[in-house]
Length: 133
Image (cartoon, rainbow, N blue to C red; front, top):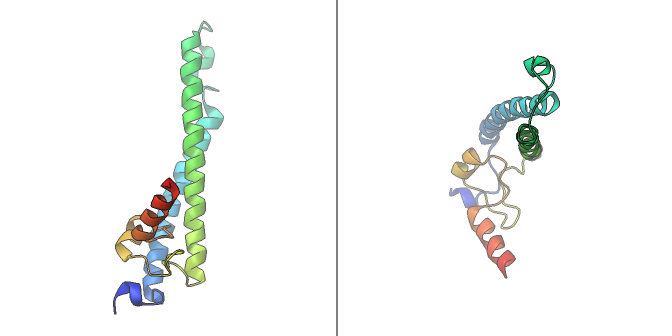
C-alpha cells in the first residue's frame, strides 16, 4: 500500500521516528544548554578579569555581538526543541506524519530529515504560493 494512501504510520514505524526524535532532542538540549552557558558567562570570571582594564569600544561591541548571536541561536534552538517535543505528542496520539493540510502521510524520507515536519513538500509549496499573492 502506498504511504500517502494509508491513514497513519504503524506502531513500529512510530517507534522508529520516536527514536530519531529522542536522539535529536538530546543533542538539541545539549546545544541549548551550551548556548545558555555562553550567554550567562560571557566575559565573566575568567582571566580577562585580571587583565588591564583599557578595553576599547570595539572589544565591547564584539563581545556584545557574540552574546546577541548566541541569544538568537538559543531562541532558535529552544523553538526547535519545542517542535520536536510536539512531534513526540503527535506520536503518542498516533497522528504523527499526517500532513495538517492534505491529510496525507508525509513521506518517511522527509520525516527522517525533518522529524518535526507537519506538512508534505507539496502542501508547503502550495502555502508558500498562497502567501506570495
